[in-house]
Length: 382
Image (cartoon, rainbow, N blue to C red):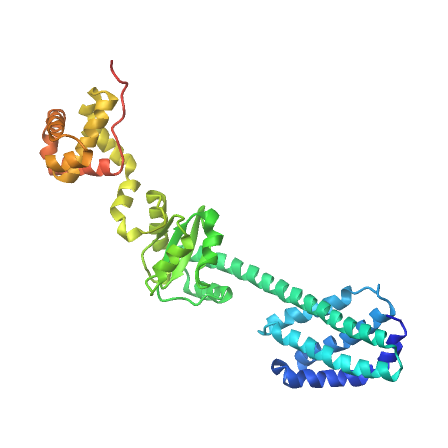
């Protein structure tokens, strides 16, 4: 564009500034208020900078534009800080472009600018508005990202406090406010794969707070017994392992977390499991070393067998304990002939003796076998 076009447009700037401010206040509801304080300064700075920089670009297309971009990036940040969406600012830019084009076109016609130059002026105005809109959008996004990063840090601190016993109420209130977390009446801990934590959290409501605790993904789930909550958790896990602890008041979240983490480690679940529904399995898993000692003592007589024979006896013993010793039930479970089952039961009776009739011994054996604990293997004899 010819540089002298700026000389034609510059005298219009004072009146155009007043017209722009009036039009923005009239047509953009969010700006329909007195131009006072920081709000008024921001709008005036935006209008003045837009017109000043546009004329500078006409005179010198290579002029440094970083300061101008900084102004519009700052306006974008300010919109988020004042709780507004970016729509109001972009609407103001569009209003400004329309008003500026109308006045500049009239000035160009009056100055007998050639029609191709006036057409190029229109194109330049709207391309310029696109650029400053992009700068404001980038500023808005940067502020949003910074806020989200700060909130995530606050939420990590909040979760670190929740997993401690008897958290300080004042500290809990302060961290909850900083993290934007409304303290719920009840909460439960969800233990999950740390590597999948980010993906899982993105599919959960904003009130679910997620972080890593002891190498395991930890999510605080408010109102875990609410309608649709379990289905939502299953959907977020998408088949990944996850264990939900019991529902507790917020100040007892640590207890729910211990149960969830224990269930996650002991059960190696496929999808979502509830720790409350697997307490016995968790008990067995937590006491596996003791159960292994019980198995060694109770099944010592089986050490004289070959490994294959010992495995058959243990298999039959487990089925017998589970099925109450009924031959037909054991045969159906193991897919064996009843006569084979009777032989094995007689052999077990010979090896284990009175243990099979002792309720305490049967309970110990059942627990040891239920936990997957076997007697130590010995070298197979020829």
